[in-house]
Length: 129
Image (cartoon, rainbow, N blue to C red; front, side, top):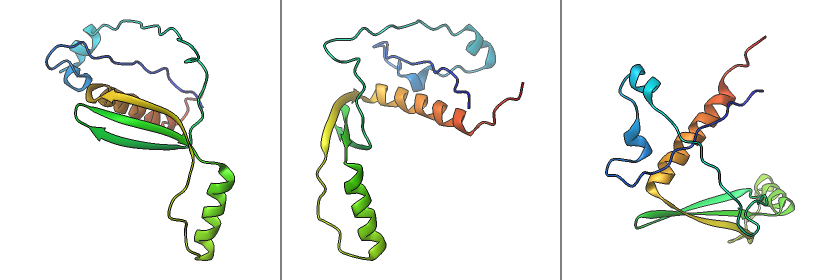
């Protein structure tokens, strides 16, 4: 499967400057739209991959806290077995918080658009050479 590179959006601080408000009105406007390449440098260990198999969104005033966590696969399998056997589930499961990211709603909108593009690229049939 071929995955197309995605383009990020950023908030320019102007009123109406959210990525959702920047949609071109016609094809000509889309052709004239220009992008800026952005390079992010790592700080401390920020370039190390973080593994997460659980995500939780916690909205707050002006931003959303996104908690990425890790639940041990053996624990998840045990809970699935309890469900299959019709037994009582535990009240809580304990995992590790991998990362907590605070995002403004404009960044959430941009992330939503980028994830939509990614999922759409998975659904498109591969082009045959």
